[in-house]
Image 1 (cartoon, helix red, strand yellow):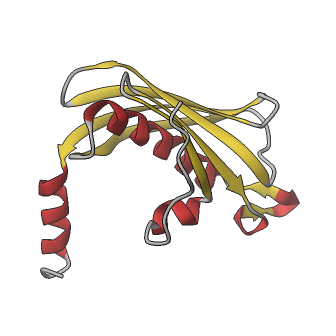
Image 2 (image 1 turned 90 degrees about the vertical axis):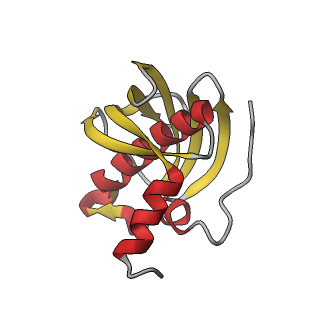
Length: 147
């Protein structure tokens, strides 16, 4: 396992999602991330809002693809399906993702979210497009007027 520290202060997305640490980044296309769900992520009844759960699973799948393909790519979601099995409460959760199949440009992914005891809270499947990081970042800068 490649246990890495919490995100840097400049990684706003990871901080917003509550990333605690990257437990594993396996070059065979697998990633395990630990998140902390906070009360600020909850709706009525103290249940984490589904968008955060979807974000955790989506980010884990992106990390698994980056683990396999390297930092020079950007995983772009073409399709994403999430099934919720149990309420996710504030606290620690584990998002585990892996590559199910595909080729160099289109990849099929799966993920699951568990509580610390291993109970499955949600599962996801996704189709991701592998994009060149420099092209994606260049298009983003152009959209912002070259900033």
